[in-house]
Image 1: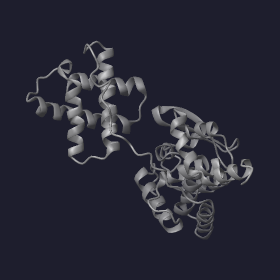
Image 2 (image 1 turned 120 degrees about the horizontal axis):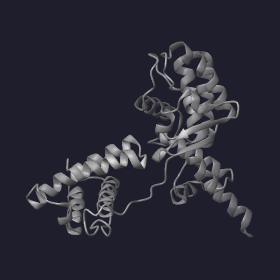
Image 3 (image 1 turned 45 degrees about the vertical axis):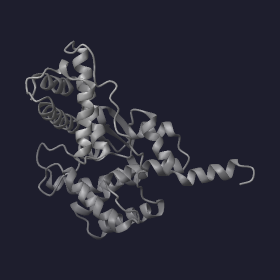
Image 4 (image 1 turned 180 degrees about the vertical axis):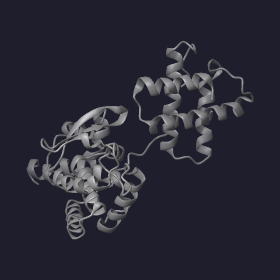
Length: 301
């Protein structure tokens, strides 16, 4: 890898507090850029000051021809922009050729979510299963579902939780979100009860020195892949919508809050979004709320 790219990635790791997943994605995308430019320019000894906006547009065009999804291409452009912004700031290049490069047009798809009655049925089923077979697996599943839906957690936030992250007395969680930003989120009484029940089984298997809240039967931190697979299977059985995932429970959390009249800014803070624009997409999914607003406000409704 080019020395300047390596320095840029090191800067991200030390100074920007980005997640390891984001750093890994940037590394892959910039390697992709370097490989393309070597072929495109016909030489490997190019300097970043030689790269033009046309070269970067050719890079995106090549990604399109390879059949990459628009969101993947947009992510690659984000990595390229960040690199050239850094090089320009450091005085390595006289101008930033990536500044005016346009990305692909992205469709704002409405996130899938679970209907309120189906969510209640899912949680009732998980609670009954934990009562019928009082063991680590069933009590842990109930705790996972209650935390995902009750606190609107991302998968990475859930898997990184430690036992010290919880304050069940106050009914709150300390969460490390995107950009390693910390926030405090509420915990429902149902989630607190589920976690307390699960903790008795966790104590039987957790390895000495393991602080992870969610552990497997060998006492180590539970993997995100396992949680993804388990939750996806359960949602496939209990919900009517297709393509549901762990993240769908975060969408469900936001949608149900808005349906009940919650303020969009409050939902933004609970989700840990950096901008309100990211949260606004949930307003489009909240059809019940819109219907109630219409009926309550329109004189002929």
